[in-house]
Amino acid sequence: MIAIRPVATRADRSKFIDLAYRLNARDPNWIAPLRSEVAETIDPGKNGWFSHAEGQLFLAERDGQVVGRISAHVDTLALTMPADRGFGPGAGQWGLFEAEDEEVAHALIATAETWLRNRGLTRALGPISLSIWEQPGLLVEGFDHPPTVMMGHNLPEQRGWIERAGYTPAKELVTYDLDITPDFPPIVQRIIAAGEKNQRIVIRRVDKSRFDEEAGIILAILNDAWRDNWGFVPLTPPEIADVGRKLKPIVFEDLIRIAEVDGEPVAFLITLPDLNEAIAPLNGNLFPFGWAKLLWWLRTPPQCRTVRVPLMGVVKRLQASRMASQLAFMMIEYVRRDTLAKFGATRGEIGWILDDNQGMIAIADAIHAKINKRYTIYERTL
Image (cartoon, rainbow, N blue to C red; front, top):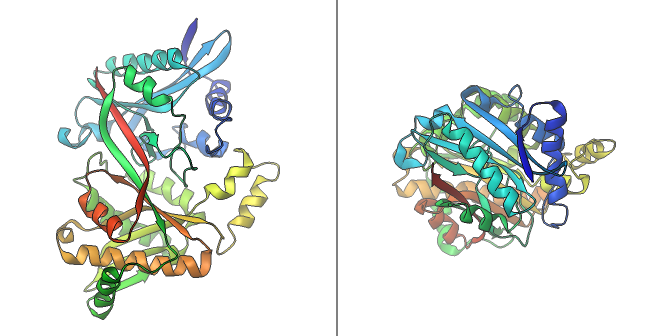
């Protein structure tokens, strides 16, 4: 018999965290996240997302053993978004989903749905863990290689469990794989060369000594560029502070660009070294020796096989112009050069990208990037 109960104590939270390590241990491509990072994610006192959201964690037990977990949550900012852009009134979410088998999975999803209904919500989307800016979607394609930093990975059977629970796809997200060792195609090189001759355009590295100021510039562009995208929820000051604190150790000036036109910042590109390469051997533990290994890897510059582009944006007023793609190609090319020269990487991953983001898809196609992973966000009327 399956018993499901809310997470209420520190011991419960430890069980909630530990379950993922047991259930995914047999998957060679699952990267064990740092336990300390997971603990902060589910702690309302340490995750700024909870400043505009509430949630409940649940554990499933069978014969006294923990066999599943799930979060049910509602984002009050997401409720204010237009209904035709993913969230909107009545939309709740669930995530942080792990289950030993389908019976457990369905019991957990039903529990999350009941929690959402009891708060007057009429639609459930998942998995979203916890914010749309964290790890949205279920991996449905690309199980044959590990995820990069800040991307999710799950067992393949979860797809069937969720679909047989009555869920249908709401949105697909994709990531692109790119061999960064060869030069880009000639047409892209010509576009970049033309941009370099345009005295109105400046592509600059970020200045880490002015971290907060540079982060503010990027955030302003991001909120403008992404505001009409499916699933967009603006980042709040507490979340921005959290992101800055977490990412600062893996922010390197050579890997982030801001594009200016006539002196005005209008586009940005963030690239991160794949931290998963460093934490994979640690099995989620910084102690006793994991912290030293991680600090050694983070020496300047860290040597890695892969870098990831999690975010790129161009202000809305330029998005329909030729300059938008030109700025994107220039930023990607400049980061590509520095990545090869200083970080030793040979591979890039771009995404996630909405499957209907034609502008980004066209850029990825032009530089011969190929889709390597697909994630699905599911929905169901409650």
